[in-house]
Image 1: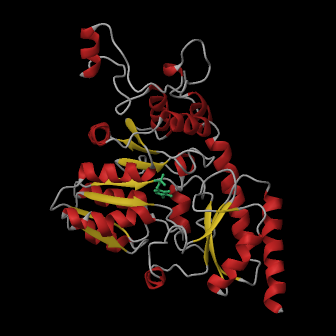
Image 2: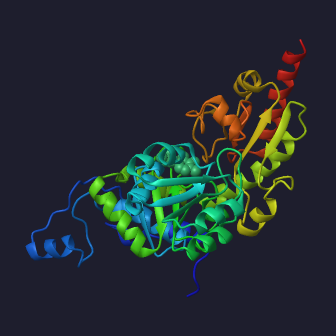
Image 3: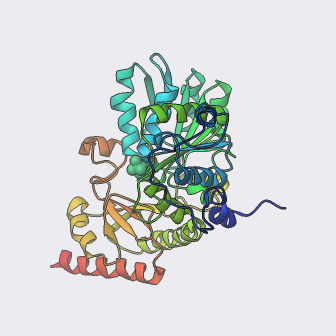
Length: 397
Ligand SMILES: *Cc1c(COP(=O)(O)O)cnc(C)c1O
């Protein structure tokens, strides 16, 4: 039989192996441990010679269905899971990096990831080099000096900058580095870093994969030897995905393509719509021809994603006035769910930075992150229009 297409796999993959009692849906197995009457069988499972489960910190049937599904959607050799996206990132880096090692990355990674780079890895005597996001020559130069890990994220948070993954993966390979890509913003619908040469792909499943903002989770997919080492670190250190969260994420993933395609469309339409307002100073979206790396995005992405950001005139005062006027948007820190979510970057992704640090990173105080939901686009456009119009009246008084 031909290999199934993405939507079919997102519905069926990883499920059948975990079904019981004729149920058509994967059960939520809450049992902490799994018992054996046969001591020899128990031993064989415990040492990994036979499939099965021993203890919930290591493996669990519901969690395994989630891991199988994301592995198949990313076309990866192996996958493992975590309690959160940050657990996926920190467990991966802790597995791979030791005192004296060097890691090269970009300045615009997710806020939590950036904290690992600036606060925690240096304490472990790991040398961290952060290059200007989108400056491929600078990245290549630093990678060529040698590094254990090249860590990328594309598009980035919140200004959706793009890095050429194929080009950078080649640079990493040349020095024997493990190339990691955080694919949270793009999802496997829009981008497949493993096909572009990455060794590992990381997800905050909390965002688009789950898609309903009701469960935390993380995943790492890629080369089997690497994933096995990372799994071993996680099974000992304990950042395990909860079975109930695994179930919610699994259910969300069945509609991943439908949702992301609608979010791609809505984000593109909102980016165009925002350009029509006098109060908007700049719109950042990889799908816009004005985006500095639009051509790279076109080459490596199947869709430009549901995330965008825009800067408003008047800075924080305008943000404070504008956002509460939106009817169809949660003002919150998460993203990638069915509802539209908005938030100032100074409060969400870059709350840990000082205004000066944000300015240095090209993040104006009036920058708003916009995660397009799957609502009807006419309603989303109209909502922004009424918010800006009432704001205009206020400003003109
Ligand atoms: C949210 C996010 C993370 C962290 O994920 P959590 O599930 O919140 O721990 C990592 N990377 C990116 C790009 C994110 O948006």
